[in-house]
Amino acid sequence: ISCKITSTEESKSQRTLLDNASNLLTDVLSGGRLGSMPTAEGAISDLFSRPLFFALYDWFLEHGSVYKLAFGPKAFVVVSDAIVAKHILRENAFSYDKGVLADILEPIMGKGLIPADLETWKQRRKVVAPGFHALFLEAMVRTFTDCSDRTMSKFEKLFENDNSDIEIELDLEAEFSSLALDIIGLGVFNYDFGSFTKESPVIKAVYGTLFEAEHRSTFYIPYWKLPFARWIVPRQKKFHSDLAVINNCLDELIKNAKETRQETDVEKLQQRDYANLKDASLLRFFVDMRGADVNDRQLRDDLMTMLIAGHETTAAVLTWAVFLLSQNPSKLKKAQEEVDSVLGRGGKITVDNLKKLEYIKLIVVESLRLYPQPPLLIRRSLKPDKLPGGYKGDKNGYSIPTGTDIFISVYNLHRSPYYWDRPNEFEPERFLIPYKNDSVEGWAGFDPSRSLGAMYPNEIISDFAFLPFGGGPRKCVGDQFALMESIVALSMLLQKFDVELRGSADAVEIVTGATIHTKNGLWCKIKRRI
Ligand code: HEM
Image 1 (cartoon, protein in one colour):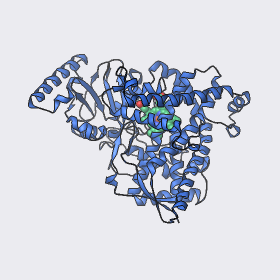
Image 2 (cartoon, rainbow, N blue to C red):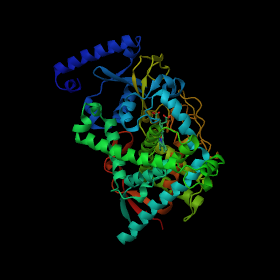
Image 3 (cartoon, protein in one colour):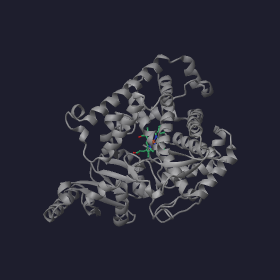
Image 4 (spheres, rainbow, N blue to C red):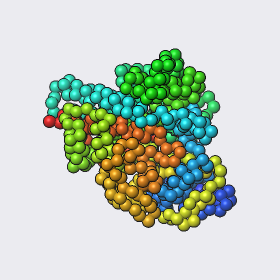
């Protein structure tokens, strides 16, 4: 059907017929309301020539906050409204599952939290979320600083090797990707990826798997489900062998954690004596606190999920933060002034002074506003539902039949002209100003005097207009971890170096899969600060 759409006049009329039939069918199934939803009629070429979320933004401005995107008989509902997003993510969260996303991720993450069905999710969230308690996060600050230190020393060495005291050129996106991998490996299962070269089979397998996950999320046909694909198609064969390498590595780590479980460590954990624990990772916590009988397969799925969920996302937020700062020299300077005043030029980050890096924190969240990771949240209705109305484009809301696929466009919410002044501008200070408008009540502004804790501009104070880590019961479990990690890495970079883009900002091409990233890397000129 997709192929026929654009070719001939005759096909155009076939398309209209098909669309009408599809509307009628959905209309009947949904009790009449989905059929009346505005439909985006974009050219299919739009979907392949640029990242999907760009096209969804243009259609949002044209068709309103809830519209239907039809591919022949298949329709997706695109949501760009805070009230509707809150309804789906929080108020009626258990009427939805992860739909298309689960189809893509289940072969990789199994029954890990992200793709998990509701029953599994309810059991596992109770086990995984407590792992991210305050003392674990505090213990992780050391891991964040050690790993960032290693990256900064590597940059310093490049100056020596080059024998040029002037500037070096680096793809910072690739550097942040390695840094985030080092951190997530140590934090989640105490595995030091950074001690191996890029040629290590495990590292190659991790990148291979991420690449495949990325490819699957941009592809509209589940080619990996074709019979025998894993034995015939070379990319699928490679994917399965990569997965086997990671799974073996994780199985080995789980076995080791169980065999080395010691009552003294359990006591230290119970007494919250993190300072004296040799291994503060989440794996250690799960095995020690839950006993040796914890299900290995489920544990492996959980670890794999966190490895993937916590790696590219954090690398991406650091990449776009540097990109945005390089376009805004006055904000870069302000950020460096804050780092200098809190840390001094040679000072180290600690749990206490981390809380004082307020402007850096706002830079990180503003980067997540402009480049949300992931740009779309995906859901499928498990039962009929009624979406609330009252927003731009509709007063009454729409009935949603069972099985409706929904994209909540976080990108659209974060750049919505209905919620933000100058939505496309990089303005970290915007979060300090309280505001309210017709559609979103209760935006409280952000009080930087409050401690790090849960305190960053978030979905609660914005009433779901700002979803840097999602919202509702399936909100990110690693939000504090990621935020602290990003603040540490960005501060340590700015403490030591000045950063400039190598070419123009327009030359940085954007591509997307699960996260928004660059096509050819973020090539920057790095100078040592004098
Ligand atoms: C879920 C964003 C870092 C683990 C999510 C969701 C978002 C998100 C938006 C919700 C997805 C949905 O509702 O469909 C981010 C961003 C990060 C980040 C922007 C970095 C800047 C991390 C880290 C970890 C992690 C570091 C773990 C160490 C998870 C898990 C879920 C999740 C396990 C699933 C939660 C559930 O369904 O109960 N993340 N994340 N994330 N994230 Fe993160």
